[in-house]
Image 1 (cartoon, rainbow, N blue to C red):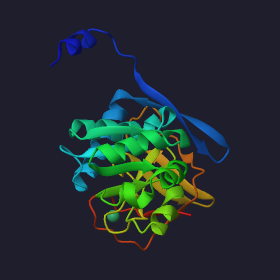
Image 2 (image 1 turned 135 degrees about the vertical axis):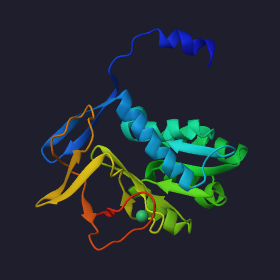
Image 3 (image 1 turned 90 degrees about the horizontal axis):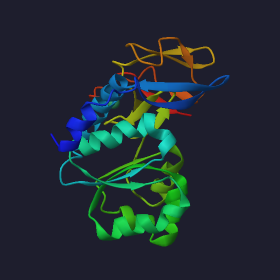
Image 4 (image 1 turned 120 degrees about the vertical axis):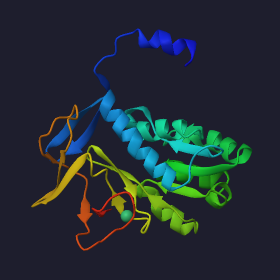
Length: 233
Ligand SMILES: [Zn+2]
C-alpha cells in the first residue's frame, strides 16, 4: 500500500464512480456506475485481456476519451492491473503525431479501441501497415474494421452495446459477446432489449437500445466470453 492510499481511504467515497450516457430508442439515457459496478466490469475486462494474453511486458495502446469511461475505463484499469504499459490516445486526428511516437518508439503489442478517424491519420503519417504490422492483438471500433481489411491486418471488433461493452468472440472477430452475468438480453420487436441482472446503479428497468445489432440465434459459441452472439448491422 502506498502512503497516499491510506490517506485516500480516509476520504468518504461518493456512491457513484461515474455517469455516462448511451443512446436509446427515444433519446439518451443517463448511465450511472457505482464502484461495485465498475469493479465487476473491470473483472470481466481482465478475463478478456487474459484470454488475449495481454499483460505484463505488453505495451498497449488504448484509444478512448473521457466520456467513454463507462466502457473503456474498466479496460484501462484491467490493463493496468495486469501490469501492461498503457500508451493512451484519443480517437481524434490531432493524436496522429503522438500515435506515431508510440508506434515508433515502443514495441506496441496490443491496440484497443482504434477508430476510423485516428486510423486515417495514422495511415497518412506513417501507414497503418507500418504502425500495426507487428501488433499481436488489434481491437478496433466498427468504423475502423474496413481500413484494417484494406491494410490486410487481422483485427477484431469491439463496441459499446447500450450500457454493456461488446467484446469480440475468440472464434469470430466480428461477433460480439456481452458480460451475461451482468446483462440480460432479449430480442424485442424493434431491436434489442437489455436489463441489468444484478443490482447496478442503473437499475433493472428494460432498456430499448438504439444500437443496430443482429442476434445470431443459431450461433453456438464455445469461447469463454459468452453464449449470446451479436453482430453490429
Ligand atoms: Zn465466442
